[in-house]
Length: 117
Image 1 (tube, rainbow, N blue to C red):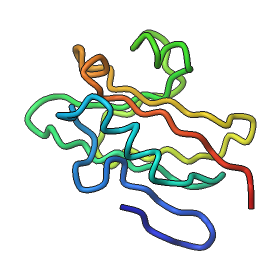
Image 2 (image 1 turned 180 degrees about the vertical axis):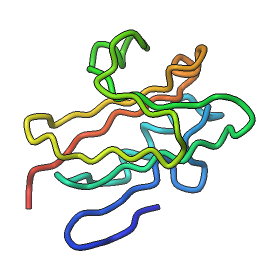
Image 3 (image 1 turned 90 degrees about the vertical axis):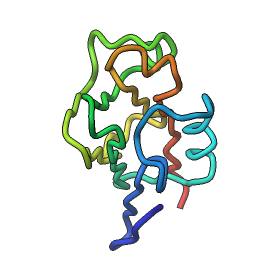
Image 4 (image 1 turned 45 degrees about the horizontal axis):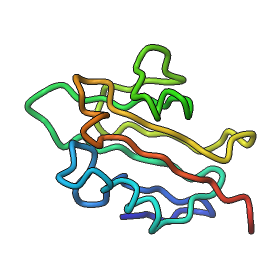
């Protein structure tokens, strides 16, 4: 799901499924491959597991690969967490859930920002 406003878009990560432990380990890879992200777009993480803790952290590529939760770039614990893709020096952005082993269960997202017009 995406929303248009001015030139930037807002994306609900995972569409109607939202941000939770997916049934398919590659769910978020498939979701991100169906979208084109541009500078100043906004990712919105809608936490779907309302009964337990949930969160989202922006991390480095290495932390994403290892599901390392120790030193996130930023960390949000409230649903409808928003991340603005404004860092013009980064093409790739990485997000993980830091709760329990959810990252290793597939609750992680990697996106590529396109600088083409």
